[in-house]
Length: 407
Image 1 (cartoon, rainbow, N blue to C red):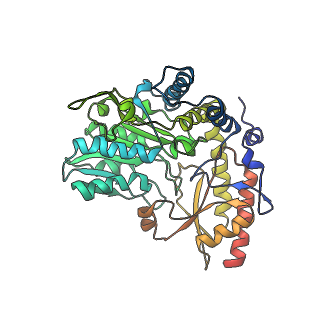
Image 2: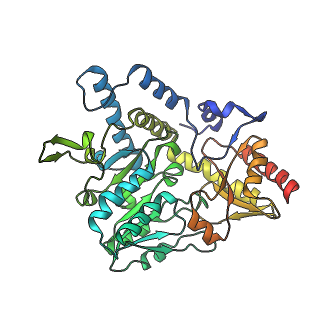
Image 3: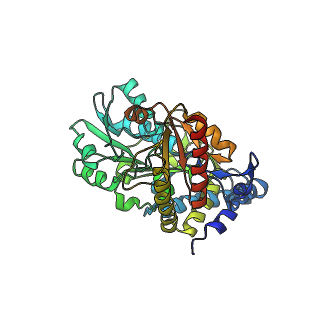
């Protein structure tokens, strides 16, 4: 289908509302995306007419809910170009997926003194679970810096590998700088050294086509609420080699076949790692959201956002009192910035909000990156495929007003 941003915007009811008597300009997509009507309708239908628990019943509604829930596994596999849908484990989002890797895989294969290599621009969801292992089991975290443009050199990640390295955990796209990481090169080099790679796809999968088979990673995590789906939905790809090294870390529900006083017989992957009643409706909504995005075309989404990125880079770069963090040649439509003078990120955000412009202010769950950049907080404008060049202009006008007041 041809890319018509105005037609796409009409699919999102919230984009037609007013905020502070101004048309809403939603530029907080890095935190969470808005939902198209088809997703809202699917959620409403599931709760109003089709709800039942999955996997446990033989009645019509349970079978229907199970069929719709399980179909999403195949949808995620298609979205990530994964050959076997049983390599997809459904969960509540990237945070749960990475914690599953930490407790279900890393604790099973790592010993005190073993190492995990991280980049300095990881989201806290790809940091804190590894700190748990550092605090509780003596795992060593090794940090790799970015260059002055916000680029992460794959060779720097690979050079950090030692005989004690058991995992590289790296983002596909920075949620602060928008920098796109060459995760394929990291995976190729790490594989040659026998080191698995976990890729945090929370941002990357939103903005560009993802081919897990081509990347060659061992784990790839996505979160539904950034992909136009409901909160509390997500999935993680786990390679078969890593599946064989994992054990469940949450018990109950569908992860078992039989339970006796002296024995538990476990279910097969992927259900082995999907304990308890899952987010049934959330997952169904995620499937609808991914199909919606694939119908538009991830290539077309990436092309539209590239145009926004180039235009916003030029417009924001023309404001000599604005400091945009990062200038990686390969980047997505995420811009974090500070302003000369007395303006705090929260002040800038408040002024923009009065103009109906929603941005994020703070550390963006990236404390180590903030320390590396030498700033306490920044404003972040993060664009999606339903944003327009006119909204970039409105952002620039709002920033000029903030500079007049605080600069």
